[in-house]
Length: 113
Image 1 (tube, one colour):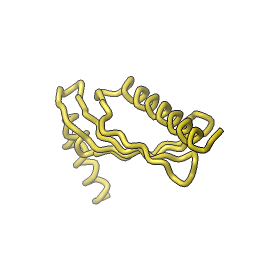
Image 2 (tube, one colour; image 1 turned 30 degrees about the vertical axis):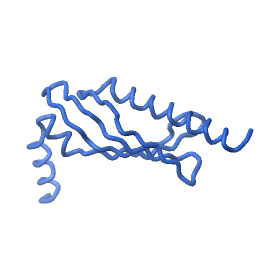
Image 3 (cartoon, rainbow, N blue to C red; image 1 turned 180 degrees about the horizontal axis):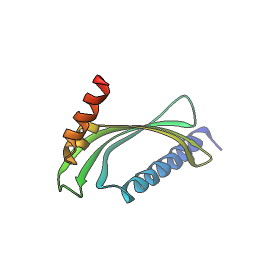
């Protein structure tokens, strides 16, 4: 298979895995997430991709809508995600969920304890 077709097939497979990941997160969450501005970056390691995107978020409990930037570092082996590191705007999520005071209390406890 020519190299350019192999790269295209690999990107398509990784994009499909990423889409499946979005669906899994959405099913059990108090927030409805819609990924926008998705950019998938390949790395020197053929198993690793970095996905950058914005989530448009609707909090089902509070009714609040907002946007949160996200980065995921995924390792995909044999079509399965074997590791994932997700970096979100947790402050925005706490505010939207009405949980800012709990977050502050937890942080103050960690600092003083």
